[in-house]
Image 1 (spheres, one colour):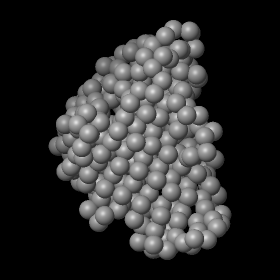
Image 2 (cartoon, one colour):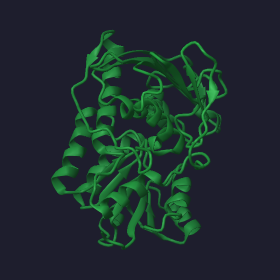
Image 3 (cartoon, rainbow, N blue to C red):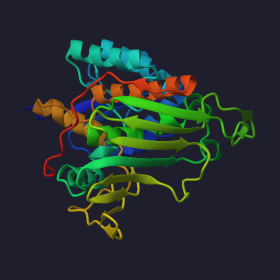
Length: 357
């Protein structure tokens, strides 16, 4: 096992780059060496805040022989191109979600990484959180009995009320932007899904940015999606960019023959958990270790780098991310046809973290 720190750079310096940078710098086996963006001023600002190098271009970052890992935090439509270029440049890559906007592109990226002997990791990685690992262990250990149905709610509010550049989010819609969080947790719990059917529409067409410019969503801002697994398990996912995050419907519910489990947040590592026997009141679940408060944004990158150093598989894989993209694009096709779409891809579900077996 190598003991050297691995050198990472952030590609794409938008809103989420600051939280990533602050988190990455807390891991002793990572060294944040630089930033890059199509707008150099943004890379320079983030680099100055953290005392690292601002590359003049994305190409310059990927050409740096000292760089080990590219962290792709660009907008949704750029994920595929930047990740492909980074892999072709011989860099390991960790990409924000979704991995790509089409399933063939996602498959291509996973295959390219394998062919080059490189690691491809991808968000969401929130199944690595303490609350999420606790919930997954309870399901594995049979606390709920045979789990047959799950409900996931993503009421993500109106992005334009807080984000300076909301248009890219409405170009892909909430299913692609935030539906990936519960989808990744569900496929971590149950493995690859086998069928998807979805309904979507634009609920709120006339949107206005913080600068008072008007725009209209390109993708449905509301969707209800049904998933099926080979063993008969089903899940319902609701996603929208309309209902406030303070809405009463939130989180993830798992329901089994013997009981139910409620996870208040599929994102926060310190999410509240509650469990009940069938027909009985819910009771709070105490986490076995103190959780990270909120989301530790660098954890997915850090776990992938640990896996590289230890010569083992990492957990937030490109293969699972590609399967989630197949679900997303299958749902998209289902909205157009009105019928179910069969899913064909597979992946190895991530192993529990040490101590959560």
